[in-house]
Image (cartoon, rainbow, N blue to C red; front, top):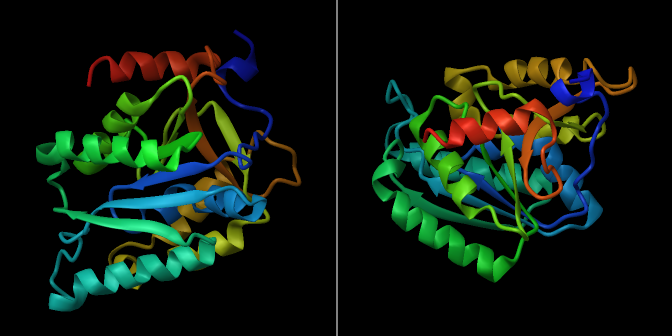
Length: 239
């Protein structure tokens, strides 16, 4: 294997393809693939974001009380406006309970795909630790077809990528979108952590690339693209 089969050394642009972004919780979309969403919307591609849960268990110390869910939903709408997305849905399944609703979520997502007809699905990677993230990864893998590629993104856990997307020009919009989630930033400085990760992901690219998002593209275009896809197939076979 040469180096490029182990890790990407050139940026990939897939923003000319229509996509659905699966976000288990409001903020996952901005943290995981906010820069790429902006690239899609600026290119004129259709983008739809589906929030699977209410994220209702994120207020760990009950700081925001009964207004927490409404605040988080409002933050999501503000973030999507910055990212250029006007097509979105809130499904409001219970936070941390997606496994119990996996069949229902799969059926609803399949219907959405048939209606929207995307070329790509963005979903959290199977390397994530959060149970809702892992369920979303499993469903995304099930929805992979000959006409739809699946793009796994990283949120709280780094993945083993096979494509890197240059988001240097889009990073400011991503920053603004993440900072809309004031309730989540109260508990964790997600922005500084994501900024560091996106700077690190640019380390193998041209020096003029300041920020990059890393993805694991599973699909026909990827084929047997490197070690990452082989590891993914092995991992998903154990889910």
